[in-house]
Image (cartoon, rainbow, N blue to C red; front, side, top):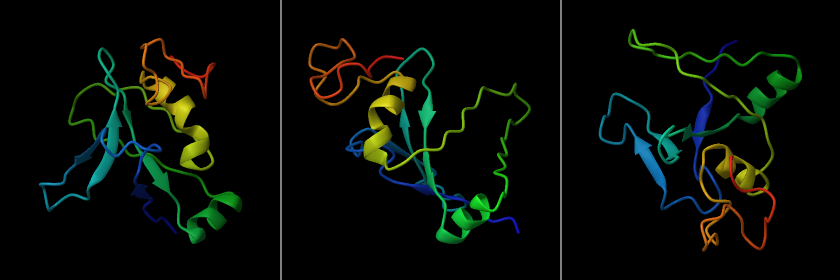
Length: 121
């Protein structure tokens, strides 16, 4: 049976200030929390949490489907990742979308004392 995954927030650990809530003023849509990376790519990161039932289906071999509404425009690249808790994947995901490793990146080198090797893209 096909069921919809639900977007989760916070998208990244301590990302509340960076999150954008697409569709928040459009009642016909579900709200999509996201973190948008810097120019030039402006990558958009969302987090989805399967229900316990969906997790069982995935463990039993169910596939995950992605529907992209292109509105007649070219398809943009998509990455789908699977990972543990938000805290464990935060430095890696921040690096993928071009954000500094963490909030303590005071010198803008993509590193911090806690995660010295995970910043950048």
